[in-house]
Image (cartoon, rainbow, N blue to C red; front, top):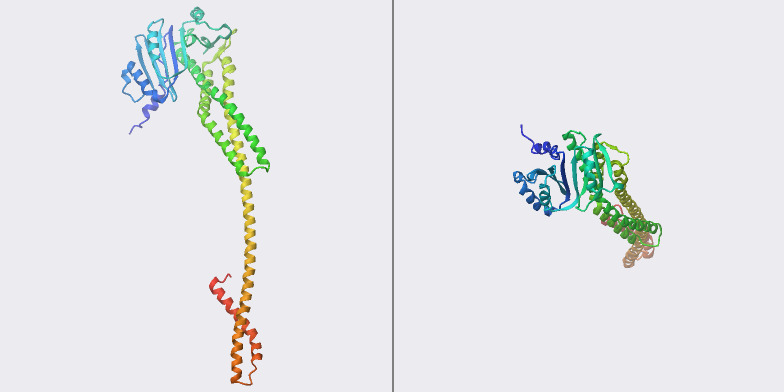
Length: 412
């Protein structure tokens, strides 16, 4: 049997995003970056310095390695960027050196978080004063029925958002998956929110487009302007709407996809509220979902405007085509009248031609009969000529009709 060329890649895909086993107590620092395509080579070069064992692979989507003794990293490549996480045991001081190495990586930071992992609630309570969480905005809740987290989702002076997570007896494997899901939730949330400024920027443009569309609809309903002017403005409006769609289409689609992932991760965390604190679910529903609905509303509004512009264009095009058809009908009727007049004129000319030819032929016959009277004195030339008028006219008409049929065909 032959192996499919993508088999290994497909099988390994199910294991790429798993974090290494976490240590409790421990530290996790994670960055989510937007990396431009031209910076990918520089990123790979920096990663290869610390992870030479996989340097020969053709840009693997995920790699692990050690930065310094006691600190290892997990790097993952995404469609529009990368993420890298540092994992350190306890209070190791080597973490600062590892952070300095990560800060060499190219890209723009979308999210940077510092997680402190502790054994239980008591150890977490001892850490909370140095976290400097805003008491009015501190989020705390149970995750998976045992673990507990604290955060205010505010950026601190060091540029990180800080989170404290207590394992509270949760086994290490489940705790590792739980913390990774918690981070995925925040990472996808921030990526989804990248669409909000784009949506807010597009909203005034859609207001202007809707006003133009309303004005054009009123002008199409009137009869003051020519159709070609209206069609030109409608085409320009459709191009503007297409430009808006092109500018925000990818980001709105990404926001929708990330929003779905946020909802899935939130369900997987199995959040239980704690009295006196806002829960992760309440925080997400109060702040994230309205932003997501705004992006959805902008996408839907743009779609409706494009459909309305398309319908108005179709109506105007139908009116133009109807007018063209009416003009063609008038032209055909005019051509029909001209044809009938030409036919009548042709028949009149044919009749005059028969009369003229008959007149000349009878004249010639008259000369012949007058000459014959000298040979046959009893011949009455005028009587014979009078008797020949009708046969001559009939003969000339028959000759003209036969010639016409041979030259123009039997239909004429």
